[in-house]
Length: 429
Image 1 (tube, rainbow, N blue to C red):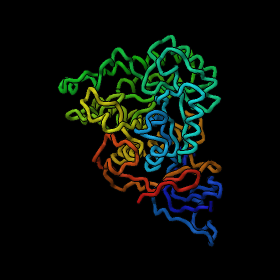
Image 2 (image 1 turned 45 degrees about the vertical axis):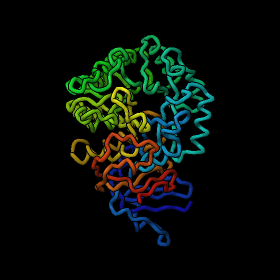
Image 3 (image 1 turned 90 degrees about the horizontal axis):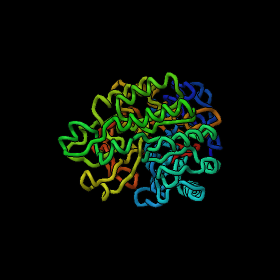
Image 4 (image 1 turned 30 degrees about the vertical axis):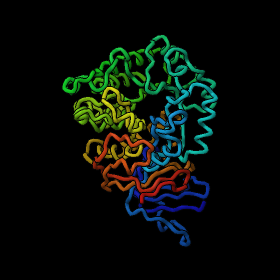
């Protein structure tokens, strides 16, 4: 690999508090050699060619903390190759994959398989999670120590929640001893039973069973009460209500934990469901506009740490059904950055806050050296035209499944190039 020089870029690197016009130098090993305003034509050897970014933005490669991939068992929905292509087109260079595969990622042999497949097929950095309980059934804990030694980054039951308080307390106690990270999907099964959308006027109008915000709140409050006794690394995968934001804000004054939000809940509300749009059947569900606004404020003031795509590819056969029968989830990794940037363009959240929630914050929670542009680190980054308009069209998506929740939406801000370890792996045509 030849040395690469970039100049005249707007650098945004929250990890190093770097917000300035400058350049980037990538060495022959794909590492960052220099960055900032000192990298300019005056400091680049005259014989070397450079790339003039003409004011486009340089962001660290995005770290998406909640991604579902089809391997093993659901390759017809997504595989490591198609996931990589989709991620790169959205500036995502590192993903945390959920364990809800077939079979479930709950033993070392499946982890070995995942690592081999990821190494052979993936172009991005794959950080797999394992399930909290065997087969994600919520009864018997997996072997945290063994799985962690195999490279598991965190533990979660993915789309499922630990309902049994005694088991959750044992999980937290083990996580504390082993310094394991717990990712919890907060949903009380009894309160959300048969629920499909937010419990409210829209649910009544459509004749659909609702999911009350209380289903989320009860699990959050229970787990945070346990966390006071078992001070482990704990992260709430995604929240959806104003009440959850309020509880988390208050609890963060005395407790150390983190939380995320799906970009869907940040940008859409229950009214967008219209007449049974199954591509907007999500978990947690889209809630009211007041809830959405509270989530945006929570992101802006630092209550919410991370934005995730909650990328859950489903084939059309699973979505072109009645609302009750349709699968839950949406494809979103390609539009994660652009959809997040809506809140910068409308003035509700600072640009550095958004990029922090997509790069350095998830990396810090995961304890990985990603999401930064530090000298000596892998040159994982994306170049973004912050003002480029585009329209989401499912036929243009790289993901194997086209179940985007924002078909035909007009967005502003597009990834032009994505680099992993200094190698350009995506270039906008």
